Image (cartoon, rainbow, N blue to C red; front, side):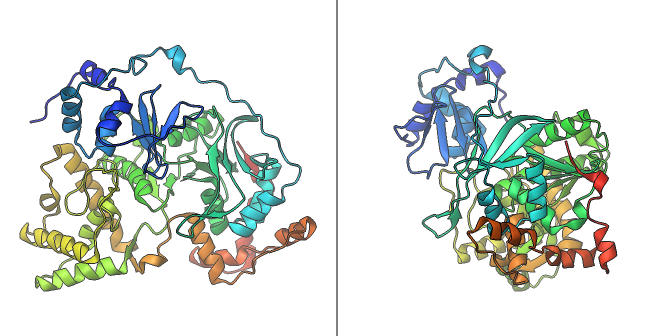
Length: 513
């Protein structure tokens, strides 16, 4: 039986000082305080930030945050009930500044465009075209429209524009460094006071579909790879995984006269990782309601209730690692059984994204066979442990007469969480019938730029490596990306150059919004 708590009770408990709460579960803070009043937690590689003024935390890796109850659920490994009881049983000082502080305290300062723009755009072009392999023609278009620019420090600015007004910006460095694992990293950030729940976007023609990516470079990459996704289209980058931003892109387009913006669907193309799959699971859940002719029970914009509005556009979403598939087949054979494994693979995908970490990849926080409640550091499993977990899952499925709902029912959760998870898993199992692909794990790409980079490498496109600005400009003008799209053109039934050119935006379909 689940006890119900009043909003006043929860509000009081969430006023518990989050710094003291963090200290009570062994989390210490770095002494440095940034200009927003936030401090990073020690030993978390900068991924956890706490703010005593707002009495909130933010997890940069999971893209989630909140007050003390959410903090204990995310970093304390507790359920909602356990988190509430923990705050009730411990006498933490109350932070009276929040969540009861006045609206004036929360007032956001207006965005001020104070970047020093460089007349030289070679860093921007070299990074986007040479390093990230984005179409030079698109880069030129974006520069002409002042949707992107380069500051004097060499950073790329991705402008959030509403009409001609810039209301915010994301920043991406062009100087590459390497982390301890040899992975390339660059500076990334968001300009102070950028409009919240909005992001970078660009459009061609009169949009009838919306493509959503986390980062602008992923949007550029998908555009480069797909000539059939360049006409009457809007691209939106949420700069992370933010549901409100998706809705606001649609509302903004509609307010500018593009009333058909969702006619052909909203394509969610987030990263193929925990946060990206979790983000998609929200829209997969909405689809299960609308396909059944029902409205989604939680508050969402009315246009979200259009039947089958959301389309999965995550790269390699339907790819299953070869070693995982082998384990399922071995387990099934060892039991002397024979059945379709796709429903089980769908459960595994949404539970932990086939990872050897027990981190969850679904919005409802469901787990049973492969995941666990959120931990400060997720549990890693060995190959043998994974084999045992898969065998336990397959055995349970057989014992339950191949009844998926009965097999994955977890009494730890309320009925709705189990029902939601069953619904999206069943839908993915159906989609797997036509779309499932088995690949070596290292071949599965994480985002659209990874996909673009691999395709460029496969066709042995020569890398531009020039420092002279004039030579670089000439090289970029002549950098041919048409060959990258050959497979896509062939799949679309395009067999000659004349037909291929039809995919190029016509003069009247210039960049808008």
